Image 1 (cartoon, rainbow, N blue to C red):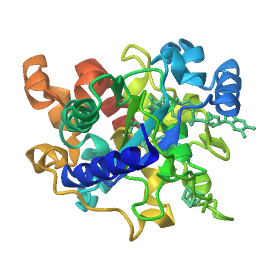
Image 2: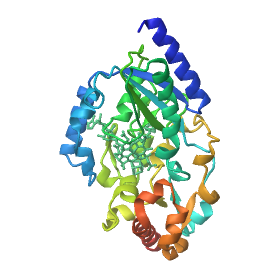
Image 3: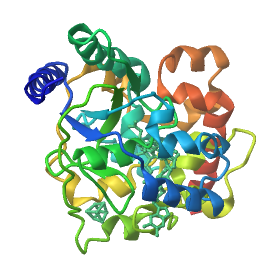
Length: 323
Ligand code: B12
Ligand code: SF4
Ligand code: SF4
């Protein structure tokens, strides 16, 4: 394919991505992630993935995306905002009546709602180039999504380990299309954290142990989302939950790039269900399986399961009561 043809297609993809509500669409060359995967291996060897054993598998695919899609030439990265501009009811949290749900989980599961949009972009490539092969991922495979986003120029990896855009902050999801089409790559942008260490200082459990390195064993997001429900949250973590019942946004809330920058989405799927950004401990304590299944159908919270939600609520409540 000529450079001119690939430029036309890239512009077409960018145009449609904006129409579909994505913030950006940028492209990286599908070369090996040598340093990045070596760093991840070190992270795994040191046990910083806690109990997420699935991260140990398919390291060859994370390093060489050609093992995911043979003849991969480009990695197309898109980001979609989940920031709605709505805030938490502070008094209910301070009184210890309710726990905060992190912003990404207020509405529908992003895997479900963004995949059709991503597939729509993918189909534009297949229409113009029927012989091309393209694969879509949204946290659905062994893809180092943040590292591809950095390579493509969506943003830089902040000290909180998340990808930050100079235009949109960090409250966005990452989506990836791997393609056998060779596009002109975009350029990576410089790290703009500078001397700021606000996220490191604000993390209540000191989970950010070095620049962009999270120790999941200390991270509230790990404990309240990923830790299996039969494992109790250790006291040294639960006493520092700072009101979070599902996920944690502290290292994003304090980030200066999120103060004025986040692009507000009006995408109805990401608005808080039942208008609620918190869960009341009383309601969680009494919640039946039927109520849980109904309330969290197609929500990211469904994955935690009812016993996990009750475990989080109890841990948060006991921490509140011991204050
Ligand atoms: C596993 C995982 C988690 C784990 C582990 C977190 C982590 N930082 O990896 C837990 C459950 C804790 C988690 C939490 C969250 N997550 Co998460 N998570 C993922 C997932 C599935 C894989 C990430 C991964 O591969 N981690 C492996 C580690 C090693 O990679 P890394 O963090 O980039 O680490 C690099 C550095 O640590 C460095 N490194 C390590 N040691 C050393 C040493 C030296 C010397 C050097 C230089 C570097 C270095 O190397 C690593 C690789 O280059 C991705 C989706 C995906 N497939 O990519 C989503 C993803 C990263 N999560 C996401 C989100 C939104 C969150 C939360 C905000 C949710 C919430 N509100 O609670 C929190 C944020 C916590 C945080 N500050 O990171 C988004 C981030 C979007 C963005 N803007 O960047 C993603 C991309 C999902 C998506 N598709 O949108 N997550
Ligand atoms: S998500 Fe919360 S606990 Fe995890 S690193 Fe960020 S501030 Fe710390
Ligand atoms: S709070 Fe500061 S150091 Fe942390 S990610 Fe934001 S700009 Fe970087």
